[in-house]
Image 1 (cartoon, helix red, strand yellow):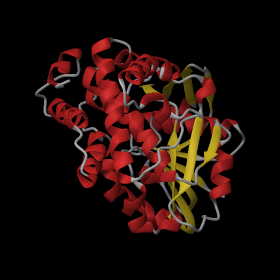
Image 2: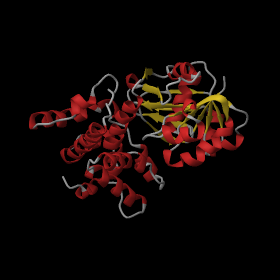
Image 3: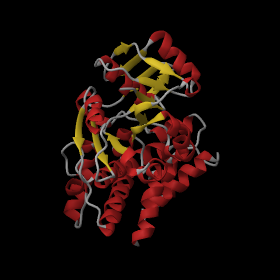
Image 4: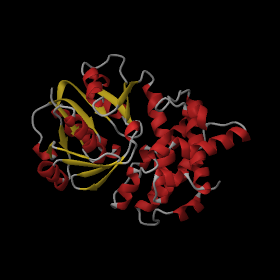
Amino acid sequence: MRVAIYGAGSLGTILGAYITKGGQQIELINRNKAHVEALQSHGAKIVGTVDFTQAVTAYTPAEMSGTYDIIFLMTKQQYNAEVVQMLKPFLAEDGVLVTFQNGLPELQLAEVLGKERVLGCTVAWGATMQEAGVCELTSSPDALSFSLGAISEKRNKHFDEVQTLLELMGTVEVEENFIGTRWSKLLINAAFSGMSAVLGCTFGEAAGPRDSRRIVQALIKECIGVCKAGGIRIEPVQGKDIVKLLDYKNCAKKAFSYFIIPIAIRKHAKLKASMLQDLEKGKLTEVDAINGAVSDYGRTVGCSTPMNDCVVDIIHRIERGELTPGRENLKYFNL
């Protein structure tokens, strides 16, 4: 069996290091030549809440050859149209593409490959790239989990093999209601990644102070609202029913929801959103696939999403150089 991680940045490098450490062969593929060369020369150095170095196999896309049975896709979703066409010849006839991307990417990928050849996976941990070959795990080691699901009723022959590979790093929940799982991850990303990028801070720093926590709470409420309107049942995250914990209909429950937010995110408090990392590097973000996806679905089901709309607007203004990430951006929220 031949396996690759395409887009092996911080998340992919850490996952690849764990899988290799567990005794399985996997190829890490990244366009960043300096990162690939560092991995080839010194191995993957994983720091943060863990500390180890693991020799890995790494290539640039230009060095790819042959076909793979399993490809883990970990690039940004905004490049999917080009990436999936490029990867198609490298995927075996009965192979499977497993997307770890944010948002709701499965259907777009399935249009090219077919539903049976696409799996979706969400991760409940975070990471940052410190330098070439060095990645920081920012989540607690006991929070390393995945949710894996299919969009086809017929399960791909490699499904169990994908699960086994992921279990070399953390626990794997096989989801029957995968769209509900996607929305549970999207809710967290819209609220915490969105505000991390807007404010230029970690998840914990967004969830702590009163002013930003109120906006995080409102973003969560909007996500739950559009899902209810669309008949989508949001799945628990790591065994916690986030709708039960964070939704509210009265003042007492709203106060409890507000109180619990920093506690709910404490294992990921040090995480800095990948969107913020992109902004710091002068890159475009995938905000349209995160907060923008909430806004789009809200329009579809007739629910207003002013907080998510505002996050999208602020981040696009930062991309254009009109604003910078910082707490001064709180003034643009009408709450």
